[in-house]
Image 1 (cartoon, rainbow, N blue to C red):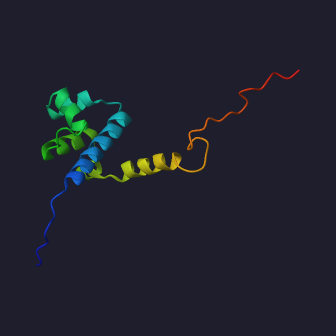
Image 2: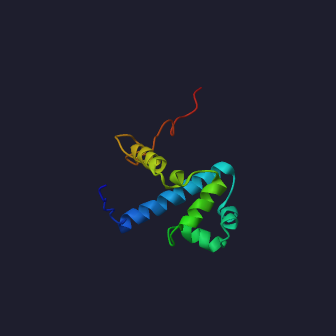
Image 3: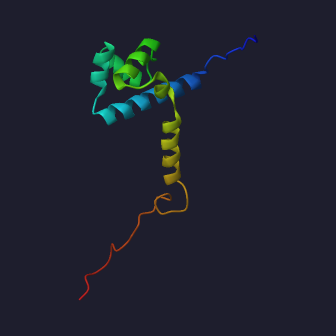
Length: 118
């Protein structure tokens, strides 16, 4: 059996993971018509602590991740999966690039100065 060394997460990786968890929780709360307050109650923490977790000011404990996954009826893997967040960012970037009036900041001027016809 070969021992495998695991590299610790970098600060950037930790921040990305925290953003991913918060993004996935926000999406699932919205999809279920729930809010952060109801999740905070389910986790047994104060609303302020939930807000700090969602903003990345404090980290998610393993217990909180498990309890959040149970509340949302998801696996912990689903909460830490960043594929949907990356897909949304790619779509957002795609909209903001290219040689289109919207991407270049120009306003479309379709019919703004038209006069009524006789």
